[in-house]
Image (cartoon, rainbow, N blue to C red):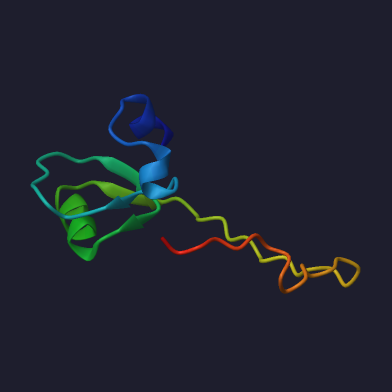
Length: 84
């Protein structure tokens, strides 16, 4: 993903930093392709050309629970906006 951003082929905001390779197009030589996900057709085409795929692991973050000593905001405390 960093190399794609450096070459202005994508911005991190477009994909949240994740890259999925799709199987559109043709591949004529062996390549090693690194990405977070591959479609089945992309994987088949890369391997049929003698290439390999490398899956980049995706970091999974756990949601944090609100601590008991943190108070929830009061039900009417948020600013209300009028519909125009």
